[in-house]
Image (cartoon, rainbow, N blue to C red; front, side):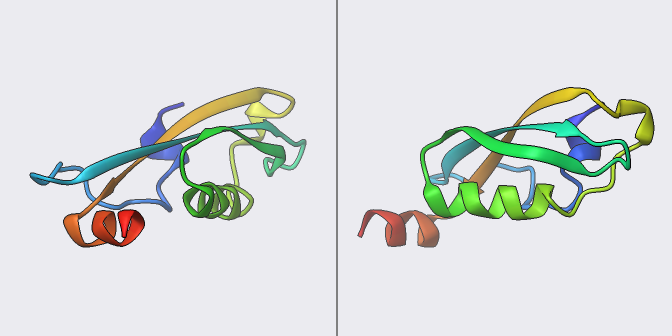
Length: 90
């Protein structure tokens, strides 16, 4: 299973702009018998708000039931443009 499939609800652009800041959130979850993610937890995150957004998005996913019972770990990379980066630092 690829990140493109898992994170189709979190598309923020794929090109890194000059001066853009990158942030990564690593999330782990278990796929329930109905294909819904359960036991969602953030493994690594430099930013609490981004981590909360990823958890909220993951909780809405519907995965293939063939993954039921599987533990999955997925990094999600965000590219913050110059404006957002300045807000975070300022």
